[in-house]
Length: 368
Image 1 (cartoon, helix red, strand yellow):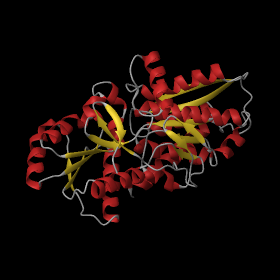
Image 2 (spheres, helix red, strand yellow):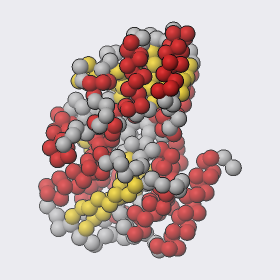
Image 3 (cartoon, helix red, strand yellow):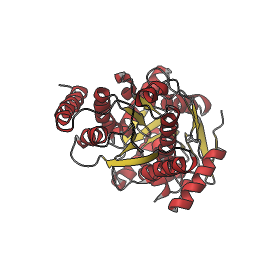
Image 4 (cartoon, one colour):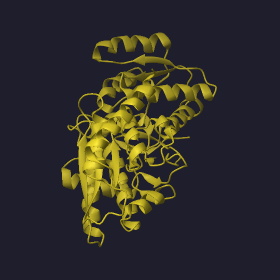
């Protein structure tokens, strides 16, 4: 049995068991004064997504005139394999949420998707970029983030055409999202007809010397990183010393950016534009977030904030009718801090991916 089939089986069995325990999900128009929106995060130690979502909830409750109030119900997916499915079912049946916002890894997103496929509760991905999520053809799945195929097209085009690099090295860690991103980048390079890049799995500082040797033996001209900022920090420094071009998937702009790895340390890196860095709406969000939580937000927070505001706005426009809310989303159009939010027929974000280059801690549009 293949991995995908195992994931499907776990999700279906979990759904059938928990359905008998919790009963049927609410599908009629909600009349309660409190409108719940669920949030799933990978690990309780990472709180940016929750904080950004709560900021969006607070703004909606104070600014919109309504006798109903929104409430965020947060769940962590840490624990034994399959916890993600159980937590999703809990949000659907126990909490009876209108929608679930997922700010977590792609592997757990597949589990959550199995539940929402059966329960018909809206799921909005605000972080996982695995394009196979939309290929399951679940009508209630939507993604606010550029998926790995969209990211790969932008990175590949700039590296091979604008940068005119030929000796490229793909560097990733063993994380599911990093490996998936690297796989789709390699597929895009092949699709565009360029020379396939070499690959290096960087697991720890212990193989930093091996990476340095690889740079010199291969005469590496540019690298593309698939992993978070804390993981990438030493690789970026080494690449600068070796005068190698540096590209990164948007994973390097995530939550760790505001804790142990500052934006200035991404100088000379060309990566996926989180938009909120440069837009006026995004700057205002950053100011409000810092005022409330004492630190600047990373891309994790920005996308969670947009996902929450988008969901709340559509619930409000639907008159708090669950079925009307669901029917509106496919054709919805919303201007968020991360850019315009519109979906294709599979629930993917319809948006051309832009690249930025960090100079002196400030993002600028990457040259074409």
